[in-house]
Length: 195
Length: 371
Image (cartoon, rainbow over all chains, first blue to last red; front, side, top):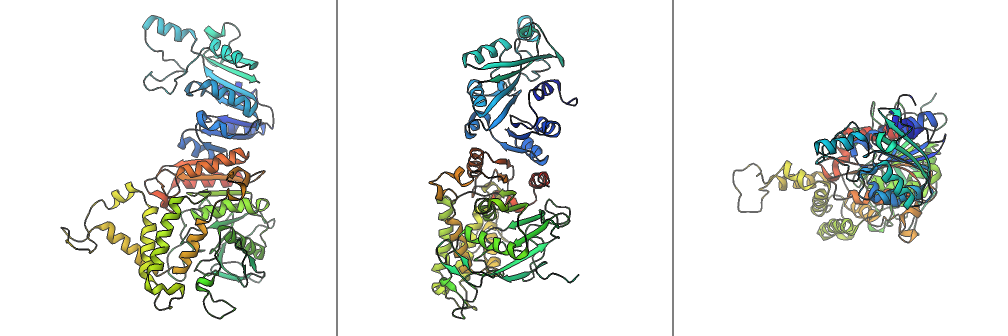
């Protein structure tokens, strides 16, 4: 998994060999393809962009063009071992509903998102009074697809409120693990959740 | 090794057994016109069946010997294409009820020695699929690596996975639906009524030298509009006039779009049988995969092990993306391995027959994933 981005590698670490995996918002299928090659998973994907879906299908992946906000209800309960939501939660209209759906569809949900509590974000807002633009949030406020950004603490609170167990949490900054002060110091978070 | 006469271009076979049709009727001495390309692997694992649309035929990648027209899907099927005779054993058959070598209303009824006409039994998409399955038995093809089709061909491809789930490893269904909508049926009925209103139709018992060409041409004109998008028609013709500078204040083909449609109608009647048009449109109107399952489409695909690729085009209003999504939802509910993509095209329903690098890329990747 050395070729994968650090956040994707952290996600892949949570996926067992031969698992049935649904990657929600799978982009062009890079993660699914890596999981298929290195872990022999039976992977499926959902992706909004037609160009990305075409690219993913052209690599031989089973990917459906669709919208996680509306289409997750189509999948039967416990159809997958792992459902992955990578860098997508913050673009959902109803992230709480999507989260609940993920743990219905799969026994384990792996959710990776940019941490809006990162010190650079806080500092940017505090000092400049402008919506932050950082390495993980590179798009200006008027053009971003991110409508529901959250912090690590926000996410923990939502998981607790929905009765979800955090089986593991990995935090990253510049590709390195963050072991303390995650809500300040992590640029990205990867949570492994169970019902 | 002597040449096996079952394989090659422009073949015919009379099926050894009668077909038991969905209507309950029985059809004996069924002939199937077909073509094969490529060579069947020793393990039989590389067979791909191509299903044609309403007015297509078996000449998918080779010229039609009767009209000289090139194969209708040479963009998808041929050397270096996603479906390639160098890798695949490709079978394409004229549908049951057709007029290009397979038994249809223009065929001679062995019981009377005269053309069936309207005594030909009403057939369904399932009956077409059963005839194809019998053809594959004849060819020694046990299982298919894939069934591929667009429009009515996509319906057959989907129906293959329902009727013979053990025989189909993958389905590619393009620009199609799992049922005919009220609007689909309505347009077909306009076409059928145009044919039946032609005095030459004579209850289907028309003379060989005087078929109902006017009615069939109008049917084709109406249908052809549904194959194009409004934006496509506007871009191609707009309100431009045909070979004149001003309108004629008459009913000649003033507009280019009129001239185009008339040409489409007239060239169609030279290659298609009016009664076949009635029977095949009827078959698609009756198509509804969910009907045997109280409208639950997912139940039709329960426990399927087949992989599916569903492709829609954004400007196709004949079989719109919403119908493709309905199929995808059902396949997801059935926990099937499904891919779905909506491709952008200004060409409406006809897009699947035209140059579409995206379509070729998707089909190629999907098929290779199973090889």
